[in-house]
Length: 431
Image (cartoon, rainbow, N blue to C red; front, side):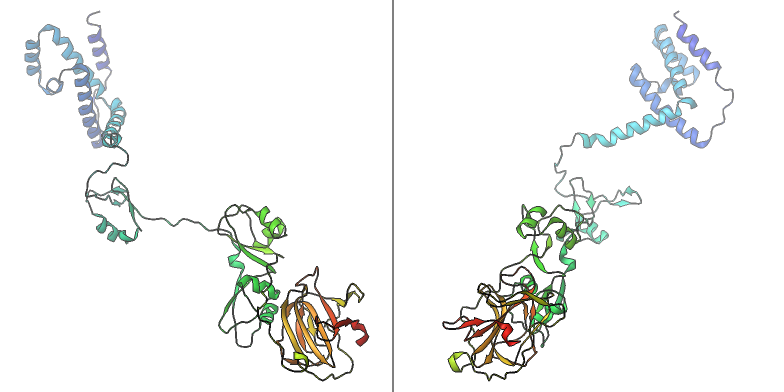
C-alpha cells in the first residue's frame, strides 16, 4: 500500500504514446502550461519543483541523497504529477487557467478602487484603435483634437478612468402640430379676411393663432396659418388629452385626428391644435372710430332707391329665422365663408367687432335715415368711411358672436343703429 501511488504513476506512464509529433502552437502552449502547472504544484506542496524537473538524473540523485529517504517519495510524486499535468490532454485546461489568472490580475486594481475616486491630478486618456486600447497616453486637448471634438464646449466627456466618450445624438422627437402650420408673409394688398379665405379658415382663427389685437396688418408681417379652424395651444404641466378636450369643448378623437397623433400621452411643450375651439374676441378700442362728419355725426348719403340686392350670394342660402318681435331681423343660413354684399350703394359707418352679440359686423348708411346691419361675419372686407356699390362684397358669412351656426343676421334700421329713437323694421319689405 505504501507504494500504491508509485504503481499508479508507473501504470499511467506506460499508456503514453511512444512518439508524439507536436505543432509549434501546441509546443508553445505546452511550455506555457508547464510553467503555470509547475507554479501551481509549488504552491500546493510548498517545495520548488523547478530543480527537480529540469535537473539531470545525477543532480536528482544528489538532491535525493541530501533530503533522505522520506523526501524521495515526495520528490518522485511531484515530478510524475508535473509530467502528467503538463501532457497534451491538459493543454486546454491550462489555457483556461491562464485566461482566468490574466483576468484576475487585470481587474484586481479596479475591484479595490473606490467608485468615483480620482486617480491623479493629471488625467490621461485611453484611445481605442483597431478594437484595442493604445499604450500611448494623451491629454484631453490632444485627444479632443484627434477625434475632432472641442473639449471646452462639452462635446466630449471623460470619466474617472480616463476613457473619452464621443457624444451620441439621441432621438427626442415629439409628435407636434408645428409641422402642420403654414406661414404667410403679408403683402401690400392683403387683408385679414382675404388671407383667411385663401387658406380656407376663418379670420378669427388667424387672429387667435397670431394673437392679433386688431384687423390691421403691415407689409412683411409673417402670419401663422393653422390648417383648420380652432386654437393652437401648448401643453403645460398636468395637461391631459381628455382635460384639453373638455376645456376647449371638443373630443379626444378630434384632437388625435387633427394633430395626426399616434400616442395620446402628452408631453410638456407639445404644440397641439384644438379643432373648433374659440378664443377671446378682438378687444374693442377704448376710443371708437368715428364715422365721417355730417348730419347727426354719422355721415350723409343719398338714397338711390331701386331693388335691393339679396345680402348673401350663393344658391344654397335660405332664411332660417324670420322677423318677429323677439327677433328684429332675418337670419340667412349659408355655407361658412359665403360672400355678404351691400344691398344698395351706401357708406360704411361701422366695420369690425362689437360686443353686442353680433360679433364681426358691418353697418351701412343707405341714405334718407335708412341703415343696414350685417352680423356674425367671419371676415370684414371694408373700412369705416368707404363708399360701396350695390352688390359689392363687404364681408363673409361666419358664426362670430352669439351664433350656433354659420349665417348672416340682417337688420334694417330707421335711424342710426342702437341710438335712442332708432328702431328696426322687417327687411323683407325692401326685397
